[in-house]
Amino acid sequence: MTAPLWDPQQYLRHADHRTRPFRDLLARVPELPDAPAPRIADLGCGAGNVTALLAERWPRARITGYDNSPQMLERARAHATALLDFAEADAATWTPSEPYDLIVSNALLQWVPGHAGRFPDWLDALTPGGTFALQVPGNFDQPSHALMRELAESPRWRSRLGGSLRHADAVLSPAGYLEHLTAPGITADVWETTYLHLLHGEDAVLDWVKGTGLRPVLTTLADDEKARDAFLAEYRDLLRAAYPAGPHGTVFPFRRLFAVAHREK
Ligand SMILES: C[S@@+](CC[C@H](N)C(=O)[O-])C[C@H]1O[C@@H](n2cnc3c(N)ncnc32)[C@H](O)[C@@H]1O
Image (tube, rainbow, N blue to C red; front, side, top):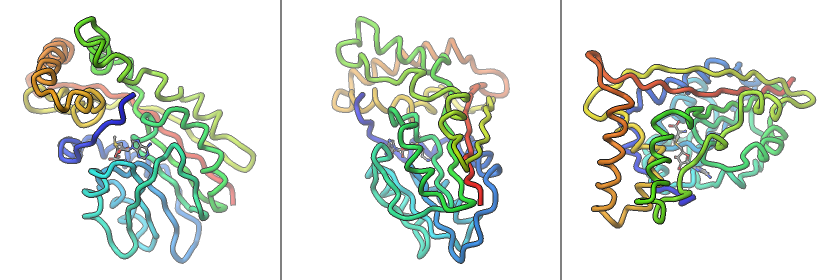
């Protein structure tokens, strides 16, 4: 799969809707151990707007947002403070070099093949009473992604885009997360939610996926404006039929999976 180029501006266009699952995840993170300055890692911090929410909840914490996109990190650094910084790291290989009270990862791990293999190292780094919390999309079988994949694999596009998009196996099942996050001394809480995002504006679902799921296509076709526009026009027509605009907006159902693993004190 092509490593996608990210566009923070496009990603943030739906920040309200996108931040909701992060808030719901945080609501299930217990208070952090009584440390003078809790230590927090935000893996795949993106544009840093959700990392800033961690600083709001734990104002004395030392927080580092990690990401492997220079574009996202540049945008994130606008949120930096004396206690909040950002650094480049690949979640596929990131190994904590110090104990953490909280490791959080929101809408990242679907981009990291085999990510459950990293969990033992991350759980090992948790302080007593520490938490690892994750949220991933669980919508790869939905029309937004299925239509994108079918078009990319169609005879017209296969030679350029075949194999560039992720399938349902990009994430585990809820039971799979529970299994990988339950260990001696660790308890896990796993759940799923389907949000019915009510989006506004023309071709709102296309606008949404341009910020995330469609990045590999936009990256592969970045140097060929004509081809990119042709793909977008075909995909847009499919989305219009799958997600018709209603009188109050376009309903975009979005399933998300959550897991919170907690080390006993
Ligand atoms: C959908 S965005 C989520 C950003 C942020 N966590 C949020 O909730 O707004 C996914 C982020 O993961 C980052 N990412 C993708 N693969 C990564 C990897 N292997 N290592 C680190 N970051 C990665 C991308 O650069 C992007 O910023």
